[in-house]
Image (tube, rainbow, N blue to C red; front, side, top):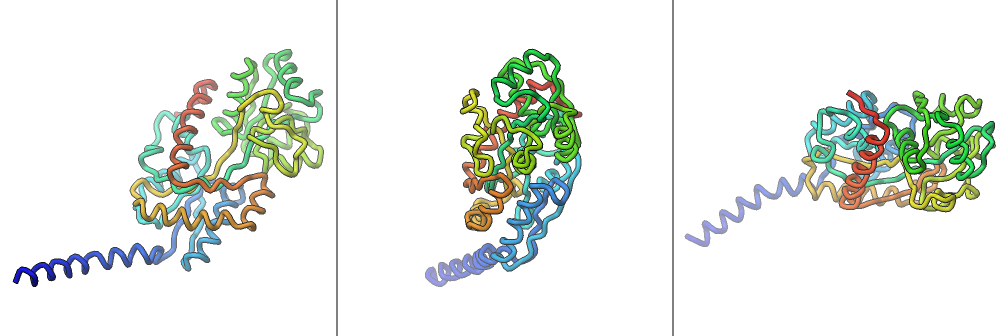
Amino acid sequence: MIQRRTAARALLALTVALPMLAGAQAYPAKAVTLVVPYPAGGATDVIARMVADKLSTKWGQPVVVSNKPGAGTLVAAEQVARAAGDGYTLYMTTAAHTISANLYKKIPYDAVKDFTPITLTSTIPLVLVTANSLPVNTLPELIARAKADPGMTFASTGNGTPQHLTMELFKARNGLNLTHVPYKGDAPMITDLIGGQVPMAFVTLSAAMPYIKSGKIKAIALAHDKRVDGISAVPTFTEAGMPGFVSATWFGLFGPGTLPADLTNRIYRDVAQIVAVPEFTAKLKDMGGVVDNSTPQAFQAHIQAELKRWGEAVKASGAQVD
């Protein structure tokens, strides 16, 4: 009798467990939505679509990119934070995720608790560029020029962006008094840099590289730990005289905060295989970027470091959004 009861309990437990196990093994059983907090066509959207396309093939289910721009990424982030942690809503975002947490007085989610880091897929470093009309060619010359001309302007792609806050860190490090001129994106900013209406800016390498190569703007220093192909003559900040000064816009994949560890690791492994293939690496390289392929644990550590760094930059700039 006891043996029969034990066997019955074991069978019942197995009956309950099998569907759960089958469900986990079958993921995804339907379309997955990959939310992007920017309009179509930008670097984040391009990278998200590269990942989504390969995941669709690998998983045998559509991975649909959903562009949800607005409120400095808050609209998209809130959607993901409120989504079920079943793996069917994922989020591809940038350093703006850690900047917004410091920049806004109130946000409708917790930037850490409401999200599960899956992987830091890639980064694109920033490069300090100047207009050709500015008579400087090296970092020491630019710093000396800025000190001799208090109030000298600099451009950015908008208040609170990595480009803006990186310049605030640069100002603080060198004791400079510069005036911020924000633009709505890369295109109008670069147009005015070429025309000499603004003298300098930090720009993502993907946006700046064509104009650096064509000689329409000058690259002073790369905020990266090593030089990159395509503009190998441009020194890093360390080489140019500012040791350890690095800054990049990064592209990371998240799930909602309730995404379980086994599913997080499953998605990470699949994405890691995708971004490591030569085709993906080559496309990213053409954009001026590099593959990171970080584990969930390493990505979590990166987020904590970024929260601290951008918090310092926001404080230095005095920028804040209600």
